[in-house]
Length: 272
Image (tube, rainbow, N blue to C red):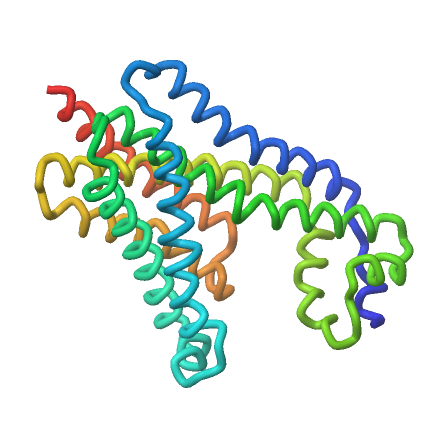
C-alpha cells in the first residue's frame, strides 16, 4: 500500500486536533452552563434532555434510515442521487430541514407540554446542538487524532496494523487518513467556527419553531424548514466538491445572522 507511505503528518496536526477536541467539548458545555446560570428559575433540565433525545431520534435514527436507502444502499435511487449534484443537494437539505424541524415541532408541541417558557426553548436548542457536536462530530475528531498520532511515528506498517487497515479496506480508509494528515490550525479554526454557528443555528431555529407552537402560527414550521435548508445548501455542495470550505463558513455565518435576527425578535415578542 504505497499510497500510505507518501502520507506525511503535518507538525500542527496533532496539537490542532487536540485543541479542536477540547473546544468541541467546551462549546456546548459553556452554552449550557451560561444559560442555566442566567435563567435558572425559568429553565428546566428536562428541556435539555428533550433536545438531546429529539436530535437522536429525528436525525440519527429516522433520517439516517432514509439515508440508508437513498444514499448508502445500492439501488436506482441511490445511484441517481450520487450521480446528480442538484438532486443530492436538494435531497440532503430537504431531509435535514424536514426531519430536524418536524422533530422539534413534535417534541415541543406534543411531548413537552409543561414548563413552556421561551428560556426553555433556548435550552432545548442547546441540547439539540450540543449532542450533535458530542455524538456526531467529536468521534470523528478523536479518530483523526488517533490516526495522526499513529502515522506521526513514521512506522506506516504499525499504524496500518493498529488501525486494522487491510488491502481490502485501504481505499475506503485513505480519505480519512489524508484528512487527518492535512488537519492544521486553519482547519481547527473553521471547525470551531462551524460549531459555534451550528449551536446558534439550532437555538435560533428552536425559538422559531417554539413560537409557532405557542402562538398557533402554522407558518413558523415551514419557515424553519426552509431556513434550515438554505443554511445547509453550501455544506451539501462542499460534500460534492462544488465549493471550497471557506465559502461554506461564510454562507453559514450569513444565514446564522438571518436566523438569529428572526429568533431574537420572536424571543422578545414572547415576553409581552
